[in-house]
Amino acid sequence: MIKWNKKDLTGLRDLSKEEIELILNTASSFKEVSTRGVKKVPALRGKTVVNLFYEPSTRTRVSFEVAAKRLSADVINVSTETSSVKKGETLIDTGSNIQALRADIIVVRHNSSGAAIILARHLGICVINGGDGWHEHPTQALLDMFTLKEKLGRIKGLNVVIVGDIAHSRVARSNIWGLTKLGARVTVCAPKMLIPPGIEEMGARVEYDIDKALKEADAVNVLRMQFERDEGAAFPERFEYFRKFAITKERLAKTKKDIVVMHPGPINRGIEISSEVADGDNSVILEQVTNGIAIRMAVLFLVSQGRQSK
Amino acid sequence: MARIFYCLQGIKMRPKEKAKLMDKDAIGRALTRIAHEIIEHNKGVEKIAIVGIKNRGEHLAMRVAAIIEKHKGKSPPLGVLDITLYRDDLTNLAQQPIVRETKIDFDISEKHIILVDDVLYTGRTIRCALDELIDFGRPQTIQLAVLIDRGHRELPIRADYVGKNIPTSKNERVEVRLAESDGKDEVLILE
Image 1 (spheres, rainbow over the protein chains, first blue to last red):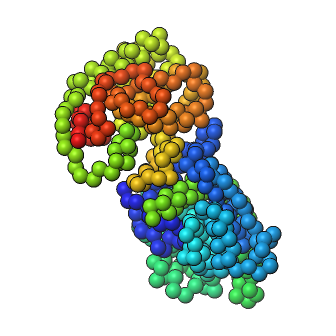
Image 2 (spheres, helix red, strand yellow; image 1 turned 60 degrees about the vertical axis):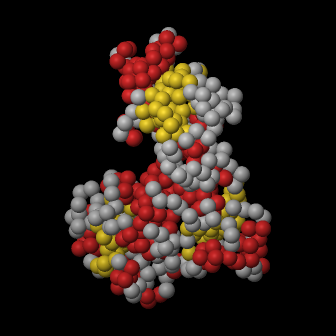
């Protein structure tokens, strides 16, 4: 068993296969805690976790909050809407102030790629990336992998398709890093304008035809179409996207029978996925949410241990 | 689980074997006696459940349950505790602990819970186990069975069923090896 000696989790790119496996294994031990009558263990008692969110989020923030509370940590949520960030304070200054308040762990969500890395370098306390720009969203990818492993018993050798707005997706990037390190084959699929240049160098295969991509797939991770980032001509039209790329019952009928359908949420029913599929037997979307708690408990616990070992 | 305390002593060298305290037969006899004492003390096995503390306590718990089943025709419910998250020394551990799964898939309320571990030493592992167990419900009683009691308690905790009492000094190590995890049944004293 390897040792975790990092005080931060900023992305999966920098982690070894063994470190990723350690997180997944630790999470499977933590999953049981949430099934108890008293859903709480004292592992992080007396520690303070600050959720610093520069972007709206329900799932990730609540999931981190629940995870921290199940470990008996104290949790403070800072939303930039109601904080000094509005008055022009920089990210590093905000971080230093939180550190000066003797917080132990910051979970940061930011619209700029690299924000978590900057904060981690400047602070002595633990920093966990809750999603930064188009860069990485490591805990989402970890919970996706955890769910896959739970459903299919392994990661190695699986064919995983990621479909949707790859260009703007941190979830896609973290998944590609993580899945390829664990030996899965990753295929990304989207309209040409949403495939970023250089994605093959990360280890992913590109396929523009979703039906071809799904043919051999063991799992498909459906990304949300981020229409709030609509940049006019560079974005596909909704109905057109649904017709060509959406995961529907008809499409799934032509794939492996037990294909696992994932989605990081929030889902746009009728755009990237049909309701029948989202609520159907192949969907593990809500299990992903449940598993997210175990993953975040494991990450909070490990970075906290990692900081001590320094 | 008593192994965790040895890690704290920072022993890096391979310790020397001083004496063999129990062999396979002696361990077998001790567990058989403990199983019978449990049946006698609780006047049967109706309301008892057995919970082993990871890792070696789990193996011992399974063996005790098997002996009880042999004599009573019915195995009591069996659970496993991993006490890592309840440790009082989590914040100043030299060695990183590995979190393993706790599994108690029956209702412990109103049951007589027999906690099983390999070595009883400072009592801190048992304190963790008591705290964790009580988070699962309110048992009628909690009783403690250990293969070895080596003394040096730091908390007011005692065992109800003991395989063997062994007076030791603090710089000795008691090592319980079991076929399930170590390939062989024996209890050694190391220095």
